Amino acid sequence: MDRREFLKHCMTLGVLGAAAAGSKAFAGVEVPKKTRTSGGARSVIELWIWGGPCQLESFDPKPGAGELYNGGRGQIPTNVDGLFLSEYLPQLAKQADKFSVIRSMTHRFFGHEAATYLMQTGREPGGGITYPAIGALLAMMKGGDVKYNLPPYVALTINKGRFSECGFLGDRYRPFATGGNPMAWQFQVDGYTPAGGISRQQMQERSKFARELDTFSRQYAGHPALRSAALAEKDAESIMYGKAADVFDLRQEPKEVRERYGMTRFGQSCLCARRLVEAGVPYITINASGWDTHKKHFETLNRIAPEMDRAVAALLEDLASRRLLDTTLVWWSGEFGRTPKVDYDPPWQGGRNHYCPCFSAMVAGGGFKGGQIVGASDEVGGKVVSRPVSPVDLLGSIYELCGIDPAGMFPENPIGLKSPILPGADPKTRLREIYC
Image 1 (cartoon, rainbow, N blue to C red):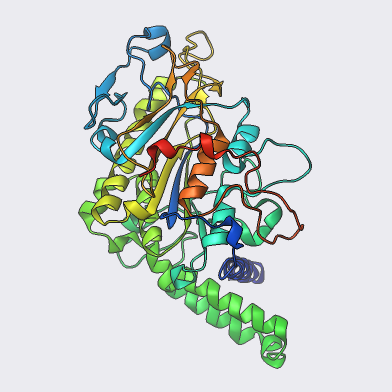
Image 2 (image 1 turned 135 degrees about the vertical axis):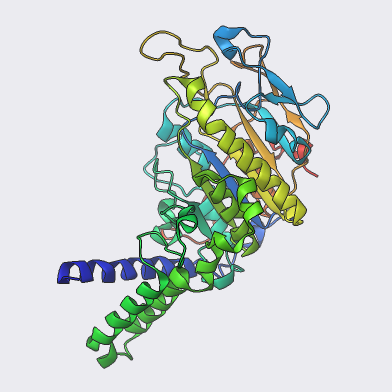
């Protein structure tokens, strides 16, 4: 290894150490009593269907709308009388008693960035302040009981990238994006190779070598900054090849469990999310790309929808069988839906575009009932005709079920902001009709 390559690997250790040190900032944060409510959800798994999933091909099928709108696709019954899903979701149809669907989500932003920001923060963009996403805030307020020094906000496997999810809280509250491929274990025979292509033994040897060369730290070991750096390095190593790393090692799961989730990046990410819940991580987001189907919408869904359907169904079934669903809130959504009318003209060749006036979401566990329907859309899935649900209504409900009063004030923060967690949050419009 030449000098440049050696320094690059040392820098990697430093970056991971900083991430681990930042994760400690979540622990022991005192939440003001006025923000606390009763709530049984200890963890949240956010299934972010990145790009905008279509309401008609998910939780609000319209079999009578005609091919110009439904593309000739129909609906299928579920294990709940009167609840029908798209034919793209046969596995989820068998688990419908575990989740509720919202068919009347609505807001006014057609662009990815603004819509994502609104769905994640409950605020419209502008005003010169970037507010933290729900994941950063919940991790800060509920991150005191995570095992093995794991970060309390984990993104599998990449961040959303639409805005800074930590907001004004700063980098210490940025989601810990794992990177890599959760499928990597299956390609290894003689040992698990994590992201980056080097084994745990190699990482340990490189860390030891770096410490042997670090005469400066030994000479000034008593300095507070160097003590902090040593702790950060220890934390980083625990994530890379300690008990924290074991949480991400899916080889520890039986083969039949891994296969039930699906041998795909999304499927194995869902399995990893369940393991993170068992380790006490309060917020896990799985960012699933590929749903921005401007072109060849149905051809794309034929490829990616079965992966999502299988994995989410397995996740709900697995959480329930392990008695984790009551304390784990799962929500499925994108930043908006897709246009009800299919664009068959060139160059779209059967595509759907961004659409925010009416779209769907799904919620399960953590205090939400299963087998329920909230709201309704018109005959083509284009307009809300009953019980409109805003992003603030959905986020306020999630906060409430997690034991956080959305009308309470932000806890202490770097910019000294004195503001409600969700301004304008109205208890009357929260989803209390589907609370357990």
